[in-house]
Length: 311
Ligand code: GLU
Image 1 (tube, rainbow, N blue to C red):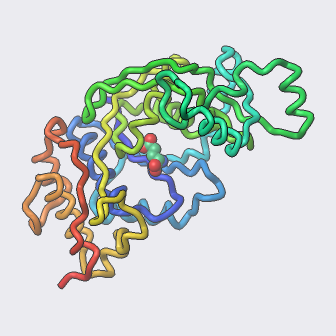
Image 2 (image 1 turned 180 degrees about the vertical axis):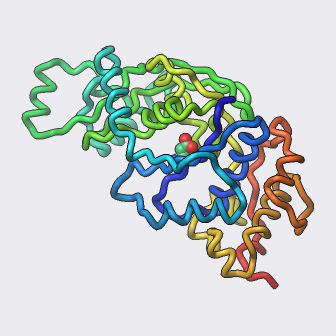
Image 3 (image 1 turned 60 degrees about the vertical axis):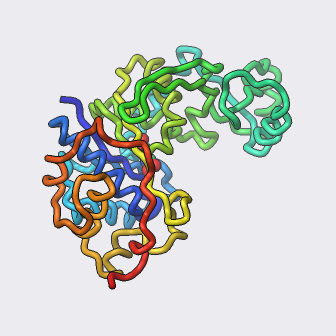
């Protein structure tokens, strides 16, 4: 049975939105009788912190979301990531890009009024795609270190998401290796999901837009494309995507307000129509009531009272 996973980036404490997504990923996996893996996406060595990794692991345990096997760490898999980049290079599917972020922005803005085919707004305009050897040498001589982009050239990808349904997107020439040499997220996540044996990727629907890139990269590397389920996000009471600025949004904050992890789990369950508000439930209880095909597409707007102390 293919596995499921939760893959947090330890760049800050998990908030209630991340934790509700973790619950859903756990429910999807366990409902299918799959293993549930925990992978720490600590690719960004500068922003990742051991304390955030530890708190993510502790939060899942406090909510009763168990995982199988050891905690996986993306940072330990650099050779596999580098090998995947190399394969794309050898297959002639990449090109070096010398653009700075600012140059790309300027070009994208200048092109706003021009017709731009099926690519999403803000997509890389392809500036470096057809540089001559002399033009490349000129940029190297000026000390510019290139990133490596995939020659996707607007390839249109369709996949069926278990929550969002059929999705189609054109893929831009996205970065597969950053200018500092580090393999980029959209490549790494594909390699890791494949090597970890992930059959279904369950995550927040903020990542739906980038999924066509990952599907394309999997196909180009000759890997099986996993199933996807992009679940609705949690919004703050103001309707904006939940963030630190909303206040007491971490499990630790909630405990300080007087709510136990079990209380928070009950709120999540009620938000998914799996229990009554205030009902004492365990993840196993929620699992018996969970139907993946009945999950709605509406985000959950966090009730304002959840950001206040328990009366
Ligand atoms: N590490 C990513 C994040 O925390 C999630 C990546 C994924 O689930 O594919 O946003």
